[in-house]
Amino acid sequence: MKLKLWFLETRPQFLLLSVVLVLLGTAMAWNEGHFGGLRFILTTLGLVLAHASVNVLNDYFDYKSGIDLHVTRTPFSGGSGLLPNGLLEPKSVYRFGVGCLLVALFIGIYLTYVSGWRLLPLILIGGIVIYIYTSFLTKWLIGEIWAGLGLGTLPVLGTYFIQTGHYSLEGLVASLAPGILTANLLFLNEFPDTEADQQGGRFHWVIALGTRRASRLYAGLMIMTYVCIVGGVISKTMPSLSLIALLSIPFAWKAIHITLKHHDNVHEMIPALKANVITILTTDALLALAYFLS
Image 1 (tube, one colour):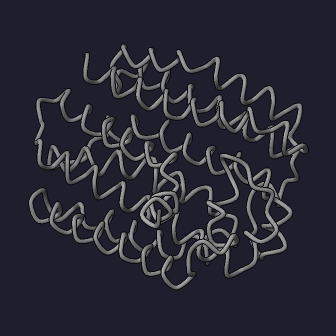
Image 2 (cartoon, helix red, strand yellow; image 1 turned 45 degrees about the vertical axis):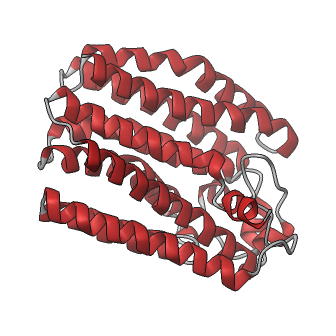
């Protein structure tokens, strides 16, 4: 029972994103003739642990600030709920989060040793951002940006580098859409939490803009995702088969439509939150498939 609680504390339903990001970065390298099985396994394990650390430390700091005591929890936002319900001890949760981060950093340092020192800045930046994300970055209107970088663009670029030993313009272009999608994941999940976040000292885009204008920005960012993909194909920096990622547009449209219509109603927003998650995972996975098949 206790082991199940610790598993749930990592919010496993979101960890699939890390796996898909590694698949995309690996697929990009595969497309150029590079693949190392052990590097793939270690990269996946390291990123999943880093992602788990973000989730666990977020729970801890939101509990300490009081946010999770007042938030309206949904299946996609509001934390795990384990600390407010007294099912785990705060100090143990903090240690667990830090432990996941340290193991992820150890893996990252090893991968830097075998693939090249230019990976190190991404590892160090990632480690720092993970630890200060909830307690600092979410209070300065930059949480969404760093979420997009830390669990979108940088993991794709890092995975690509681990396999190939270099960065490229093509890799950067292909990593833009995942970055925007992850930023939008956090962005939409902030709608149900806005009041509690504001009371807890956070300052993010929904608080700054209000839900109506924020819903329009969300729609604009989602459209920008597909613009990046089409632009990458037109500029020939992404394979033409990348256009299969446009198959996720119906889910994106559903999320946009509901958000624009029900931006101020938490319960009506839940289908949009679900469609948003499906959009992100499907788009990233289809991009990976495009690179594997090209």
